[in-house]
Length: 144
Image 1 (tube, rainbow, N blue to C red):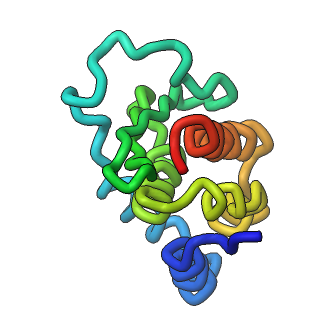
Image 2 (spheres, rainbow, N blue to C red; image 1 turned 180 degrees about the vertical axis):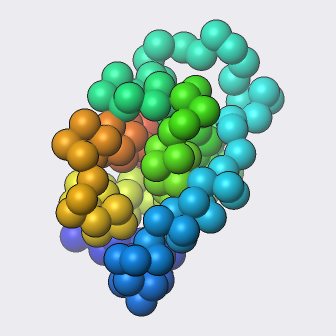
């Protein structure tokens, strides 16, 4: 069984080191580095099959195949207040693009709690887990 990608382990370690009080600023930093899906990948209106229905921030997940058979991931977050969705999408993009489907499948759903803390609302947590599930689905169906 594959292990979770090292890049994601490193991000988790960073979050552990900053502690709960500085976690919001760290997440805002990731959100600020988020870039919406390029138009060369997809244009509006976005296809419904890429829509994360559980996500209150109206998130979409897209991919682009790489020569090695893995995928690059791209995201759209339509809610301008969707800081958590943008931060999580940027983390997933940085840590999972170019990884094997086995490595992506090894990412546990609890990663949301590990990154955002136990104070995250149920709705937000389910939405972020929905983003991860869609990334896993595309990795299984289209990647290697």
